[in-house]
Image (tube, rainbow, N blue to C red):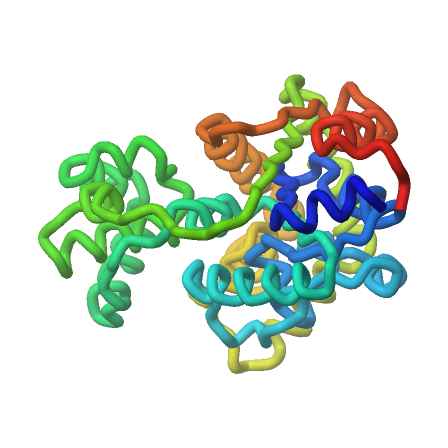
Length: 320
């Protein structure tokens, strides 16, 4: 218990980051088996109810065994921002520390991790008219819209892919509303004063081909386990639209478009696979910029080896 007390007294927070399908949940559950941790999900898709298969949500049994915070907290019709996450996460971290346990942040929504550490720029609220105009322009020609962003904000254009409509449209919307680029506004933000001892672990597969194999295996399993039926239930509700953040989640948008008759099921699967690989690439790009990251190759190392490396980093010598 001495080691655990030391970490708790130091207000330690452990963060397990990584691209999709890199094994974050498995490592988190292994850590929860041995130590008094409470898991906080850092995933912008897991917040939604009725979206289980396509988000690779932990099973009911896993959630009973190791309860997760910030899972199933919203209906798919609702919106949740990075600012909402920061507020909720900080509150949970304080509560967990008061219970003399260790907060364990687990997920792949890098914008949430970034906002937690670096703060958020003072950005304008969404403008419905401008957003609708940009959405129509994107639907006509994504590359042309990306070229527009490059002309006004080359730094943002370098990190925002043309196949990422949410971030692309938001960056152009901000420029139209403020006359300033997203990059310049973000450069003005101040770091967060968050007095915790944040230990960051990055599950970073070095072999991209093997990560792609994992992604494809998991996606096939999702389709076999009823992913299309899950999205069909959301589609049939009648109160959800394709531009909602929930429906824009990787896989959901592609199957939604299939249900809307835009293409066949095989095409939906192939587009989902491409989108998931692109998501993993963006996540890895974020991770390469993280400072002070304990890197673990989750493909070439066993779960036991990953846990041992994390324990050594935390200087844990006793099991709980």
